[in-house]
Every structure is written in structure tokens, then in C-alpha cells.
Image (cartoon, rainbow, N blue to C red; front, side, top):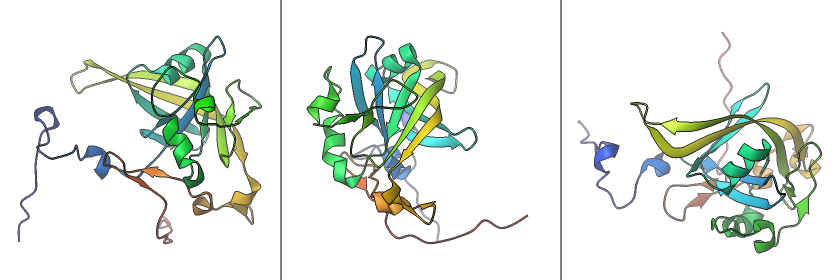
Length: 203
């Protein structure tokens, strides 16, 4: 039996109640990014277009739709911190997503922790933080090369902080932190669910 797929070309619209793209590429880890302006003003914001892109050196990255405070700060100072967003801090993370010109640490009642190698503070209560230095800031383009209002920030992780409670026998236990992941609808988030093991075949 041949399935009649729903097909659409994104430039012409999806024809659905809600854009399915970010529901299909989901769940996604959250880039909870803290940064400082050159003048020392704090910024903390979540980005759902986030991931790890390389092991050695470890490179993480996030994309911002629009030139927002985080991007401007990182362009100025070339430093940022990624903070693991967990279920326990979901409401605080959400409170930092307004985009208003405020100190999000104060708005969300988050205690800042000093970093060791970079200036931006870490998020108190988060069980893992990555201190990062900018490696590339890329303006995205469409397939014909036209620039769009979206910016990719890639950074090398130069320092890692892990709460020892997240480790067991020297192994980081992913689900123990209860990380939250971005889903697709206007309000969908997930925690890691059922786990299964599968090793790669050896060549």
C-alpha cells in the first residue's frame, strides 16, 4: 500500500496548523547561554537550535534567529557559557526567554557562579556548565546564497564543570540530571525517556 504523504515546499507554506519542522527534528537539547557585554552587563537566554558538533576539541554551537543580546555579547567578548537546563530549573529557564532588555539572572532568581577561564557567570543550580570561547560566528544563507536574519555561533569548550552527583563509576549518567529537551509545538518539552543500548559495529 502506497502512503499518500503530506508534501510541501517550505517557501510556499506547510498548510498545517503549526510548522512541523521543529517537531520533526526533536527533541533537541537546549542551549542555555550566559554571556556578558563588553560593559559587563549579564545576559542569559535559552536557544533550542543547539548541539555538540565535535569531540576534540569539543565544539558546541547554537543558532539565533535575529541578532539578539547573546550574539551581540559573544561577538564583542568572544566568550560564553552553556548551562545544562534541567527539569528542576525549567521554570527559571523559561523566565529567561522573554528577550527583554533585563538581567535574566535577577528576573529568574538565579544565583550566578563564577567561571574559571571566561568572564560570563555560570548558572547556579545547573549540574553541568561548559565555559566556551568563540571559534566562528556565521551568518546563515539560503541555498542561493542570500543572507538571512539568523546567526550560528560555534565555540570551543575550554572548561567543563560537572556536579559529582551526576557521575557513577567515572561515567556521566545522562538521565540523572533530568535534562529538558525542546519539542515541536508551541509549548512542548521532554525529559529523556526509555533508554536502550546499542554499540556500533566494528569495521
